[in-house]
Length: 147
Image (cartoon, rainbow, N blue to C red; front, side, top):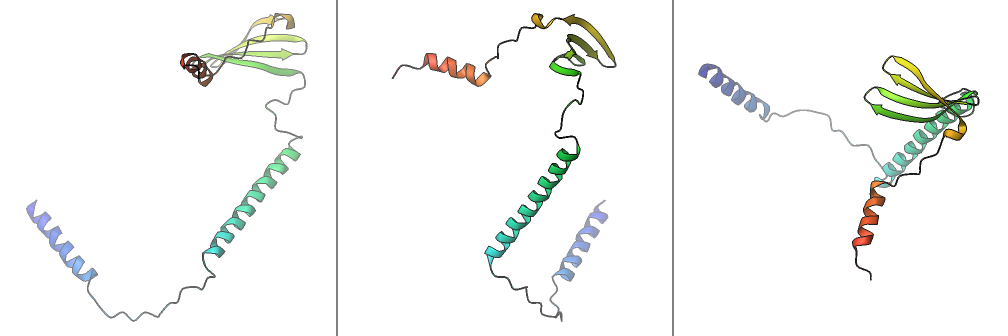
């Protein structure tokens, strides 16, 4: 093992001498391309950015135009997804409006089942819950002394 180590050290020493040996290299002199300064490269970058942004906008315009007006999650005229409630890993409840009927469907892995059918009057929209930041703001507003 020592022989391999010292052989490797000797190889590196020879390699470093060969790499840093000063020899007269006869290379042609190269002049860098002339530029007008830093401003030109910034302008060139900005123009390239505008071209790429324009191309992306054009592609999105064509996709919207030829996909029937707008990108929609569902192209059905007779069904509408009202709400989704994920309950656990692979169990999800869907609330669908099918014509005048409102149906609750359960989806688990590879099975889909109708759970129940509701009337439109049975649906009560839940009040919007306040976010965590609103909750913290309400707590700290109460605890801060009046000015």
